[in-house]
Structures are given as structure tokens and as C-alpha cells.
Image: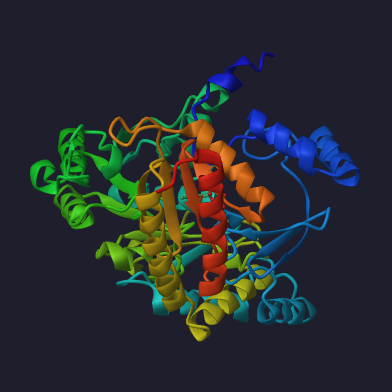
Length: 465
Ligand SMILES: Cc1ncc(COP(=O)(O)O)c(C=O)c1O
């Protein structure tokens, strides 16, 4: 079967492993033992565009650092958003060792103390009345559970979600997702009734509103992006749920009032609101839940990634008690639903985030980083936009600040130059340097990372004033 479609798939939520610069970087950076391991990886693993063949190999992960098999250390400002508390947090590692000694597994028909403890904790800290939970091993599965609950609660099956969104790799998640990489080719046929609208994306408003003095003209657009959700809810008339990330991981922040309008539109049309907080919940944005920042309470909230402390896979779906209506059916029924080890990891991770004040740290260090990025924007004409909240930060590179033509090659070059200097991050949609460091990142570490980025932009993009 042909592989020709590879070259035509547009850049999406991560940097592709098919980049020629990646091959160059590997040629000069990978030592023979690492090359041998990479070759073995490529031999046995299925190839796919965001992982195998891999970039390099790691042998240690500790705090904000990863170390490759040649001994080079990188500040991990990517981390797949699992490393909120830093890699290998000693309190978490000890808790997991103890848990494995005490109770390593529980068949689903038996409950156990860590599982109940985690459920109780999530119910206590969750926004609003989201006091009922179900756990799964991955975010994608938790999204599938959320979709099932929405169908059951409304008696409808349609959804509205954003183009360009990623919600996971399952068929339901791929269908509500809006990225070609996960929707095209062999992925179909996708679920029926999965409507999409253009997302909020003020720097490149998909509805065509122009900036005024370099800023989105919200007075003129009057959040057309939110109005469009209402429009589709009304036209379809029978939508089960709107599902979205409250802050897009690209990153993009919602314009003021966006979520209030959408919440109201959902209520007016009998649709549920599902928030996917898989990468950004639990403090990344400087808020424990991104819905706190959005200022609305969803009907279903999905967590994952960092919930497992960067060690084990666990995700959670939280909803209201009145939506606990599928007692005679199976919604998730995942083998590791009440795994005491994954539940212990999640409970301890939340306790660490609370006890170490990591949400506040993310807000403080993130605000400082954003200031510095704005300063870099003033000096590097190649930066078209900087944006973010907490430790979710984006630097959008363009060839020209007026035409905003994406500088994809440049972004890819900066990525590999930064790796040479010990900083790892990912690019989204080809030209956005996306920085998602852990919540434990200190001010000094942030400065060190941004010095690297500044130097790379200077070296690669030239002109700096
Ligand atoms: C917004 C969002 N939703 C869902 C997922 C899927 O989570 P998982 O990879 O654990 O299935 C991801 C993973 O990157 C994500 O970023």
C-alpha cells in the first residue's frame, strides 16, 4: 500500500518526524548506541507521524529534565503535558512503591481505598457540582465515556466541536476532533452527526475579522465564533453536546465572554457542555481547572495526562450526580477503572500540586515568561504573536507581520537549534513554538529556557533590534 499521503498531511498538533531538519539533527546528534536503539525502535514499532521513527532516546527523566542516551540533558518544555509535578517526584515514587506493596490491583467488582479516595478528592475540588466520576487509562477513552453520557442524558447523538481540535485517537474522539491527521485516510468513516465550527483563534480569525492596531477587534466581531456555536445548535436543533478545550492547546485563549455565551446557548438548546481539560487541567493555566478561568461550569469535565503524575496512565470523567443515569449499561468498564496504583498516583499528584502551591507557581512563572516573550516579540520581527496563560505559552513565527504568512521552516529550524542548546518543546500547526513546562519550573529555569529561545531566534532568524 502506498505511503504517498504522508507528504500531503498538513502540520497539526505536533512536529512531524518526517521533517528533513529532524533527519539532519539526528545525523549530527545521535551517537552509535542511540542510533542502534532508534533502528530497533523503527524496526519493531508501527511507524506514525508523531512518534516512531523517533528523534532520539531518553535514559533519565527527573524534575524538569530529560537526559538522552548520549548523556545530553534537555529542559523538557513539552513533556506531553504529563509532567506537571516534574518527573520522578520522590513523594509520588514512594507512594507508588508503598501502594504496590500493599495492593497492586483490584478486579473491578471490588472497590478499594485509593480509588474511593481519588473519587472523593476530585469531587471536592471540581468546579460546581461535578461530584460523580469514572476513570479510564487514557484521555481518549475518557472522551468516549463523556460522549456516551451525553447521548444518554439528552437522547441525542450530535455534537459540535472545533476544527483543528485534538481530543484523542479513538473513533469517537477522532470524529469530534478536527485535525486531518486523525480524521483523514483510513480513519473513516467517522461518527455521524459530529458537526464542526471554526474555533476561536483571534490572531488568525477564521471568520475574517481584521486586527485594529495589532489587536483583535472584539467590538466589531462581537464574538462571532461564539455566535456560530449558537447558530449551529439552533439549526440542528438536536445536538447532544458541545465539546472543546476551554483554552486551546495551540495555544489560543477564548475572547472575553466566549464561554458564557456558549454555556447560555447550550442551556437554551438542551445541549451539554463538555470541557476537555486533559492537557491543561490541574494547574497548567495557573488555575486548578481551566473552567475556573473560563468562568463557567461544564456538565462534563475530562482530565488525563498529568493526573497520573507523569508515571502511570489514568484519566477521569467528572459529571453531575443527575447525569448518573446509566446504571444498567456499561459506560467505560475499563479493566483498570479502579486500579489502586493509578488511583494512588492521581491522588498523590493532586496532593503534591496543592501542598507545593504549584498552581500559584504556574501563574507566577507563566506571567513572567509572557512578559519576557512580549519583550522578545518587540526585538524579533519574526515573532508575529505571543500568547498564553500560566505555563501554556505560544510564540507564533511569521515571515511577515502584516501578511502573517506562517514561518514553518523557520520554526522547525529554531526547534532543532534549541535542542542543540538543551531545550525541548514542540511546534504546533507548523509555526507555533509551544512551551508547556512543568508546574515545578522555577523562575531561574524559565529564564534559562527563554535565554536559549532568544539566542536561537537571534541565530536563526537574524535581525533583532
Ligand atoms: C486535548 C486533548 N484531548 C485528548 C487527548 C487524548 O489523551 P490520551 O493521549 O491520553 O488518549 C489529548 C492528548 O494529547 C489532548 O491533548
